[in-house]
Length: 420
Image (cartoon, rainbow, N blue to C red; front, top):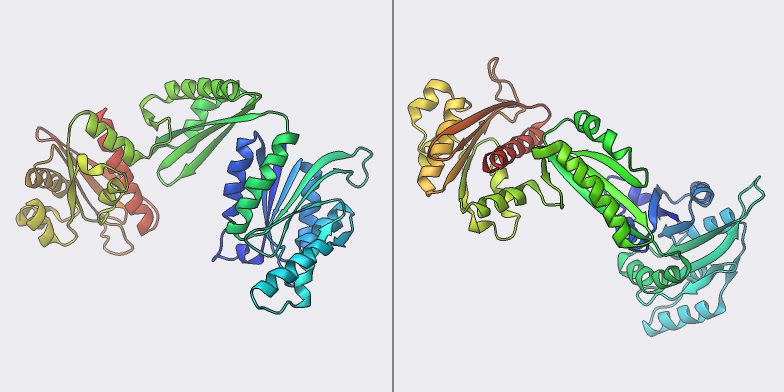
C-alpha cells in the first residue's frame, strides 16, 4: 500500500515555514510497511485543496491531511475532503459539548466559528485531541473515482497541524487502527555515501547493478560534495527486506570501492575521526579561507576530543605566522594563497600542537580578492604527517559558502584516503 501526505497551509508556501510534520508521519508509516509515494503542500484555497484531495484519492491507498482543522475561515480541510469524497459534513453534538466544556474551563467565551471543529465527514470516526480543540478524523471507506466503475478502499485521515497535537493522535490512535487493517509489511533501508564524485559517473557504474533488483527502490541524491545512494525494500518480514537491501548495497559498495566513505550512515567527519582513533593518531588544523569549518565539522561528533586536538583560524597573514609558524618571507614571496603556504600551515600546526597529522587550508572564497593568476575558488589544502607533506590545488566554483564547504570536504576526504 502507498500513502500520500497533504500538508495544508499557505505559510508553508513562503520562505519562512517548512512542512516538518510529514517527516514524522513518513517515519511512522514506514514502520508499518507503508511507502509514502507522494507529498503535497497546498495553500488555504478550497479549490486547490479539493483538487489535491481528488488527485490523492485517485492514486494513493492512504491519504493523510496535515493541518487545516482549526476554527478560522482559512481552515478548509474538512470541506475539501468532503467535496472530494462526495460526502456530507455532519455536526457532532458530542464534540460541541466538549468544546463548550473546554472553553468554560479556561474562562473563555466560545465564538460561533469554533463550532466548525465539530463538523465530521459522513461515516468518519472522530479522534479526540487531548492537546487542542480540533479533533482528528478517521475514515475507512470505499471510493470510486469519477468515470470509473470499480471502487477502491481508501483510508482517509484528517490531523490537526500543530506537532504537539498531531503526533500523539497519529501515534496512539491512527497507528493501532492501521496495524489491524494493513497486511504485514516491513521496510528495510540502506544508504551509501560517496564524497566528491560526479553523480553521472556514480550512476553509470551502479545502475547496471540496481536495475537487476526491481523489488528494491533505488534513489541517487546529490548534496554539497556528496552523493547518496538510497535503497528501500518492502517485504512481508523485516529479515527478508533487509536481506535484499543488504545484498544490493554490498554489490554497489564493492563496485565503488574506496569512493564509498560510509555504508551505515556516518558523516565524513565521523568516519575520519573513527579512522584516526583506530590508528591512535591525532589531528590539528590551521584554516584560512574555511574559517574553522573543518574543525567545526569534526567537533560536531561526540568524542572528537580523543583524536582532534584543536585548530587555529589563521585568516590574517600575521596569524599564520603567530599560530602556525609560517615564515613571513614565504608569504611575501609566494602570497598567502599558495602551495608553499598551505604546506607550511600543515607542517606548522602539526609541530606547534604535537599532533600526528596537520591540515592547512588557504584560498580565495570570494567574491573579492581574486587576481588573474589566482581566481575565486583557488584553494590549496596541505596534509602533513611529519615525514612528508601532500598539497592539493583546487579550483572550485560557486559562491563563497559553496567554495568554503567544498574546500573542507576535500580536506576531510584527503585525510580519509591517507588514513586508509
